[in-house]
Structures are given as structure tokens and as C-alpha cells.
Image (tube, rainbow, N blue to C red; front, side):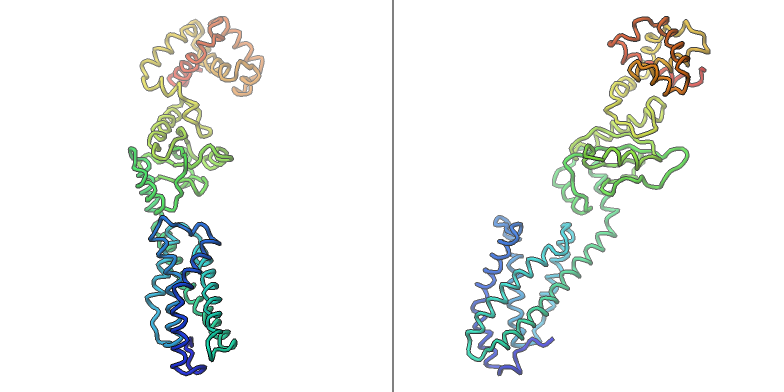
Length: 399
């Protein structure tokens, strides 16, 4: 690409023109930076001197180098193009879009072209035709820089894509450690290209015995930690719109328990409760048809931490069942649990147990004779549910 003024002006005249433009180069660069900061307020960072120097260098260096090329087309550009490749790579690593630096750079170039053109037209021997030809060269020069920005960006993105699985595993490990430092989390999240959320929930998962997908079909922003001995997920903004439905749909082939919503630094605590809730599901103490929320199982989680105590509770609260025939005990216990959980709605109990409503009414009459008012006592209902779940788990084949 021919950038020289040779052939249009003699060498001495070309040097004189460029020397005049150089004397104004610093002011032109300052004006270009101000225009960029006006059009893009996010690039105005007075308290970040490194950032400010980079922004000015992105304007001043190309201006100075182009003026050099106007006199000597052999002026090397490798160092400047390497700088712009590094800028593009940095933007990729920061998660910015490719145009994040291209747009302000074009604005800065526009200011520089306008100001240098105004200065040049006032000089002897410089015609509008000559100015127009040089402006065309400026935009061709700008395209080379744009290509360097894009190349740096693409190279860094490709490297990030290769490294991302390992970086996300490292981030999951850090999140699940005890009280990770906020700065460490931010750096790890940035490296993994995973925006650190305000809240998250851990989900303990286990493939169903019948098999399942190699990975849960959850949204892409869910951080999967399937490399740990007890696999889990970390779900950002778990209480946001549509999140629960998406999680339920994506985990159809998995037994899953969702821990409480916490700040990212408390992910390990959320996982502790998720794993305990998953333990209840695997033991048959909680349903496993859909993901269970640990907060919905708090009484059972608390009591089952001492199995002996729960057994004693079942023996005491369910003693009236001892008066029923052995063949009836399991059906009566199952019916009573459903009755309590369905809010004393006999029709709902019939649907849940897939039995005739008349059968349910018969069993409820029998239970009323055994337990009397106890099964309607609000202070006893939670205890009865805990005791019944434990008894049914310990006596799965009584009917």
C-alpha cells in the first residue's frame, strides 16, 4: 500500500507538510480522546490511569505512525499492529464484544482525519485532491489496524474456548470450597467466562437407575461440576422467572435436590443441604419424580440426622396402628400420610393412591377409630408425617 506523498510532492515539501501536522498531533489526539469519551461514557475512566494511557495510545500511535508513512513508506508497523492484537485479545478475555474497541477507534480516526485535513488545506501546495487521496489512505491504514484487533480477539476467543472446560471446573472447585475470597472468585469467574451471579443454588444430582443423558439438559449458564465424586450443579439466579421450570425439565433423567439460595461464597453450604435432601430421595424418604427443594424438606432433614430418634418417634406416634391387622397396616399408613399431605382432601387422596374414593373413605373411617382426634391435631401433624415416612421406608412391603 502506497502511503508516501512522493510522486505528488517533492520530498522536501512532503517533509515540511508532515512536520507541521506533527506539531499538532498531540492536540489532535487529545481532541479525539475527548470525543470518544463524550460518545462512549464507559470509556471515560479518570481514576484508571492505565486504561486512560491505553485509550490515548490507541489514538496517538496510529496518527504518528501514519505521518511517518507519508514520508517513508518503509516505516515498520509490526510493533503497532502487535499492540492492537493485544488490545483485541484483552477485550476477548474481558468478555467484551469485538466492536468494543473498534467503534471508539473509528470515532477517534474520524476526528483525526477531520483535523489533519483542515490543517493540511491551509498549507501551500496542498490541494483538495491531494487531501482526498491521503484520506483514502488513512481509511486503508485503519482497516489494517481493525484486522489486527479482530485477529487478536479471535485468537484469544479460540484459546478461551479450548481452556474453558478446565477453567470452569476450577471455578466450581473454588466455589465449593470453604469461604473463597471474593477477589479469587472474580478472577476465576472472569477466566471461566461465567458472570458471577448475585445468588446461586447448588443442586445435587444422580443419574436414574434406568440411565440418562451424559449431562443434564440445563440452561447454558448453569455451572456443571460433574467431575467431583458426588456430582452437582451451580445454578445462578435460581429464583428468577422460569428458572424452576427450566431446571425441572432439564433434570427429568436425574434424581436431583436443590439447596437453598445463597451468595456465591456460600455455595458449599447450599450443596451440603442439597446432598442431604438427595440422600432422603435415594432412601425413599422423599419423592424423586422431580427435583426436590431442600427447604421443603427441612423438618425431615433435621429429624433424620438422628435415625434412632426418628424410629422412636414412629414407634410412639404410630402405636395405634398396632391394633390393625398386619395386612392392613401398610395401606392405612400410606393413606394417612396422603391424607395429611393432601390437606384432609379424600378425593385428592384417592387420586394420589389410584384407589376408589369409597376405599379411601373406608380407610379414613378405620384411621379415625384408631387415632381419633390426634390425626387432626395441628401440633401432631408434622410429627405424624415424619413418623409415617420413616415407618413406610422401613416397612416397604407390608401390604
